[in-house]
Amino acid sequence: MSSYLELFGLFVLLMLPFLYETNHIFRYYFKFMLYYGIVSLNAIILIPAFLTRPCDVRNLLSCANPYIMGVFEKPECLV
Image (cartoon, rainbow, N blue to C red):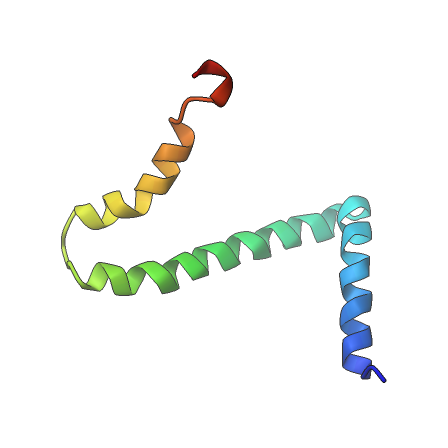
């Protein structure tokens, strides 16, 4: 038998799409929390990598490289 915590988690997961589509305040806070989580995850991953080469510009280049390649990549229809 499922515990009440699992049922509550299932209920919350099922309510997320409904709340996202109908409530603009929920949408704002959801996007903000998603952004905050991504930034925190990047910090947790990148700060130890940056400590291996302190005060080196290549640290920032290695961080920005995936974003730059994603923006300046040619679309497949133009290749």
